[in-house]
Image (tube, rainbow over all chains, first blue to last red; front, side, top):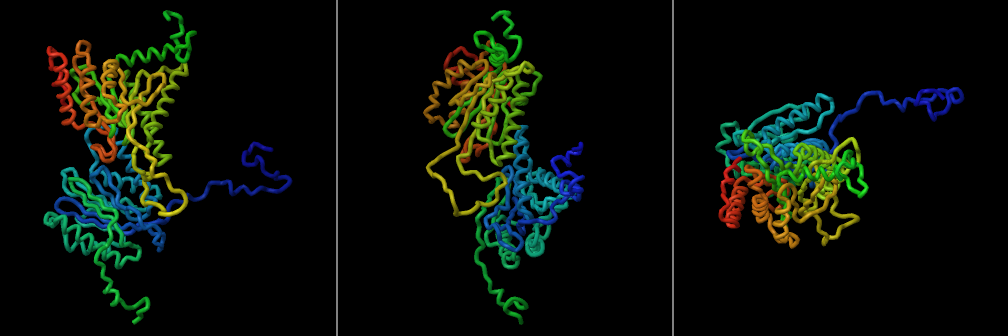
Length: 260
Length: 290
């Protein structure tokens, strides 16, 4: 017996030879998230004259497996802001709890001030940047939609690196390649926002969701769509893509059964 | 009990089984502004008579009713700093419940936890009991709540199942005294005007479960005005908060009663007072602005 606690209760070295205690060591590199596990695909959003329309499908994929098909990826805050989450679903759940506790802490003051979408975006971007600086990122891309200090439509993104970006139309993931160009046709710049009605914005977003379902193999025909205005949030979480036409599939050549 | 020495230390019984320190704490409460809680059929109202100690204080500030969690509010009467500490403990309890259980704390449980906390301050000579009696109001969701952060609905089939006829949730109202004693109430009152306020609360027949939240707000304002003693304190502000269910005005959250509704209730309260005794001057109405 000696005074090293790690030797207590172990076979004696002088009889059994040196005990390999390496498994007791906790040294070695810290392992943080290296890649997302269960993921959500695109989130798309577009500003219109009175607010913002956001949409995301209800799928959480496990790799290429469509694992969960009723996942709500649009989360509301304060009845004034919608946050669309792409990327890791468990990190989204964590952020949802962070937001819930932020909401409660904000209500302590009871001074009539409420966090708006702009404030919330700043906060989330800082959380994400802090985590990436710890080499332990929250593996998400977010779109934050609502109104700013002046009650004007607000839309901005933040990602796992803490990068922020604002534009009148935004999309994450596959949508950044497929939906963003389509949305830009309708709202090319900030000046065009004033001329877009809610109906036009909703129609454009729905069309983009359909295109994404056609071409993104990690997407679903069930989706959530939210319209955020100064009057509040109209969130529908059980929408289905309408009027799909797969006629274009006939023309696809080069893989699958139609080789030439 | 004069100079028997049994009141000099906390946690010491007198030969006839009393804890004098706790009784003195109760005396401190009896000097606090009246606080009441009403458990209505569709929500809870909390109200307090906030006595204005100085004209130099900004009206509408230094709130006395605190939010503990989204769905729980607390009002206390007695020593204000003791009330503040109580609220801070309540917030810790509520948030740690959320951290472990991932759902809002039921009103009954937070009342029980805080009751135990207050009781512990009667057990040791190194501390003194709380100089507050606290009223806790809450609304437990009547719907099946998702776990905090939940994103899907889970399996549609499998073992288990539940009794659809079972109902849970609804309004909760509890009052904790300096001894740690707590009960659930239909209507609770503490502070200076508690006797009058209790009399008025009894007249409301709250046990029938017919009083609506909106009527409750009107009654709460009226009771605070009735219980107010003009000869002792001239100035006071009425502070009122409420909690309703998902379909009600606050959507399950503890919030301040909107200024417009509160002013309306105050106007009605003053009118009711004037009707009671004609000579009563209604000058005390003008100090209530935010």
